[in-house]
Image (tube, rainbow, N blue to C red; front, side):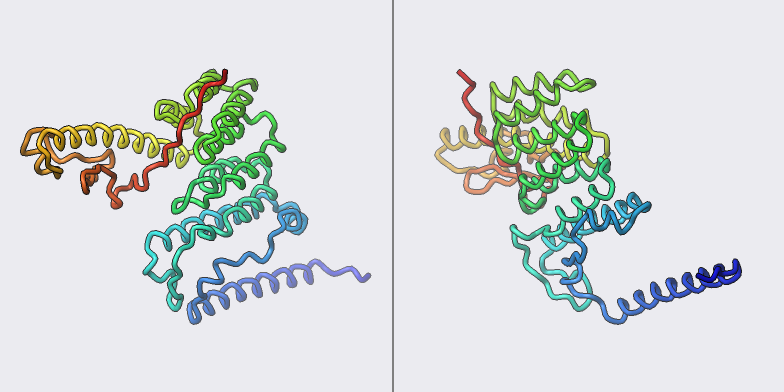
Length: 318
């Protein structure tokens, strides 16, 4: 094979750089002239993380960042279409009504690729724990995939108690399987360096199941252990939801008592006039509660909507 001169190598590299820049500009011009439809966003041509890992070689972590960004964009774009189904995400794209089963079809594949390219991509595992397990419309409603992703992370880092805590959280909150949740909390608490309250949470979960007090303890623990802002913020939102549920219970008691005493189904102005309430009640986000047909509830315009589905507790073991 004939050796190439340094000048030839430099010239070839310069040509490749020019062609690459031209290709990027050409693609940008094409998308400006012919905006892609929804189908483009819902496609993922390479689904094998191991195949991509072989292709990207020394640039695995760089490509992991790329796929992580894609995962965030996919979640955000899908959530935008769900929240505003009548809007067009791009010029020329037809509105597509959201379907719970396929609301976030690429979220797991993108997170799976991200964590295959970089098996220690901590934020991707913990993001998946929340938004794969979260019910529609805020999440994919797939706790099984959330657990699969976290177990993948544990195979890479068996001592990562946060992943065990998150698996327990998925079983507790999304599957309402309190015994399994308690088992995972106990496993996490037994690891070196794990906080003391994990063992306490395991005992509380077994004894009390899905009552609001144990739910609050769980979210306080997640907020305390959160390594990233968005997870801490999600825990704070959950705690505000629980505060709202406490307030709704108290307001409902006042409504029911007024109805028994007067024989009338009140609205909030009537309760204020009767001095049952000091003023129109607001939820922790500052949005007024609704009182419709004698039932108090969160407003759909509140940032705390939808309220969490509260699981029923389980009997303590004999």
